[in-house]
Amino acid sequence: MKSQKGADPWLRYQDGNYYLITTSFTNTLVMRKSPTLGGLPTAPSVQVWQDTTTARGANFWAPELHPFNGRWYIYYSGGRVDAACCDSQRTHVLESPGDDPLGPYTYRSMLTGSNLTPGGRLIDASPMTPNGTLYLLGSGFVAGSAQSLVIAPMSNPYTISGSIFSRISSPTLSWETQGGRWRCSGTGGRS
Image (cartoon, rainbow, N blue to C red; front, side, top):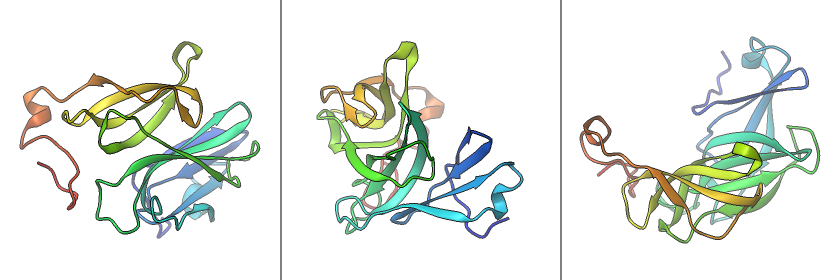
């Protein structure tokens, strides 16, 4: 297996090739391409994005690759360069100018909501299109609630319609809250 492994694997099959992107916990996203699943471990890692912007250039995780209207988009969580994991993590989106999943990519926006706390925190987001309407689904705290599954409509692949997320699921069962409710803190722990 390739020495560079990653958590949160996202795999996409497109036009005869598999594309794999994973968590890096750095400021760089790389992707591998192969016509077979078995070829991915030895496929070259292609750098598709690197960011040194202080507000978002660290601790990349949970990248996802999605096509919309002939372009590719990468959604990922990224944090502040000068902050401990993981309260500064926010969802960001990159856009390719064409139909190649390997890019190149440009930064489009941070995706957040005014009712998400602390300070608009949203992680592990994924777009979806039920009945042809675009939504963003992710993990966040609505007005100080427990970390929950949240959703908001989108006007395009890089813009939330309005600024309010709705909570659709929260931890309530004993197996979900055993040992305390999960949340990120300055040390990456739970409370």
